[in-house]
Amino acid sequence: MIGIIDYSLGNIQNIKNALEKLEKDYILTSHRDDLKRCDTIILPGVGHFGETMKKIEALGIKETLIELAGSKRMIGICLGMQLLFDTSEEGNAEGLGILNGEVHKIVTPLPIPHLGWNTLKSSSEFLNDKDVYFIHSFKVNNTPDVIAVSEYGTNIPAIVQKGSVIGIQFHPEKSGETGLKILKQAIEGGFQNEYYSGYRHH
Amino acid sequence: MIKKRIIPCLDVKEGRVVKGVNFVGLRDVGNPVELAKRYNESGADELVFLDISKTQEGHDLMIDVIRDTAKALFIPLTIGGGIGTVDDIRQLLDAGADKVSINSAAIKNPELIKEASDIFGSQCICVAVDVKYDAADEDYYVYTHGGTKQTGIQAFSWVKQCADYGAGELLITSMDHDGVKEGFDVEFLKAANQLVNIPIIASGGAGESGHFVELFKETDVSAGLAASIFHNQEVEIQDLKARLEDSGFEVRQG
Image (tube, rainbow over the protein chains, first blue to last red):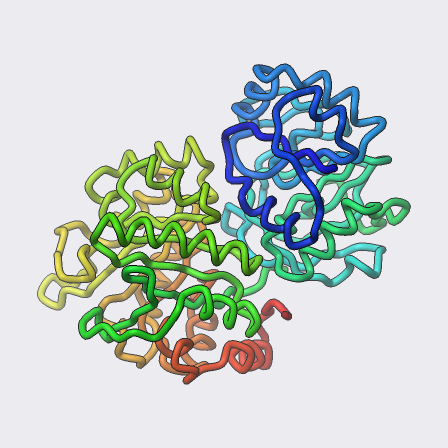
């Protein structure tokens, strides 16, 4: 069973649609006992980092998530990925600290948000050269666990993984058939041992 | 590298897709979910639904259209038309919209752009700007109500303001070019794009593939939008993408 965390803040309809298409059972929840029963936890996508962390604390599930990260598959999507890290410049807030790295505003000569279809670069053949849909203004810096990146006048970590914890910066639920395949792979096993050697830390 | 986006726009009235020339003389061209599926299969990068219903019933039907479309395909959906409040935006996002496009309401109350960006994130707040050239003033002005009402607001200044208020994207329609099929207003779009650092979707005037090539050669806008030429299959998106690729632009493959 997959538990999608309901922060009552952003749009989660599209994650639900994607899981239905993939025929995966899920529940929508913000309760720690429900999360403990799930084998996979998804932290979904849109909103403000600081506000969402406040909500996670108010729901009393911050410690639960940190504790469960070691034993369950945990998938953070877009903002959900950023929440897995130590800190963010968006709202000057602390994250869950499950993965090491900081979230900063994207510095690039190109328009912000980084919005549209961009290509993944990865050592994994399954991911390399695939076009996926991004929409974000912040990115993770200084993380050691990069599986795939995208180029946008700067190096953008697109997929990270450490053990059973996976972060996906783009929206697999909005990236057509390619995205659904990537989401399925994340749920069913992830992308481990395929660290991307081309990643630069800034 | 980021791809140039090709976006079909579906004008939806009472749950059905319609498209007129210069916004007059509407013509029914189909079922929105069916059209959306066709576009998904033919390689559209994103879809814009523009709700031109004026009734509450039309609004409810639009929510159903979004819901059904978001379940059937997995590419980004932007919804515009008649959005006036933060509550409207919330309803549309909850139904499965990825972005909303605000037009008249933003002109009436620019604070709405800021408020909505703060709540939902600027990435999902697109401001639609309809512009028309005034030959007497030798300047571009912002229009509302389907291009019938001049606001007295200078278009360049408004474009800049939208970005300052926190819009995540702009959808700029050149009313003089819309429906004429003689090409985008590259002059205005180029200048507008240089004023802001957010993505711009260009709209109005596409009649053939060459117009998109011209758009991306002459300006740095992120996307090109069109309606009837796609609905009537005068231009197939896959052919258009092949043409763009031949011209040296990166486009998304399937």
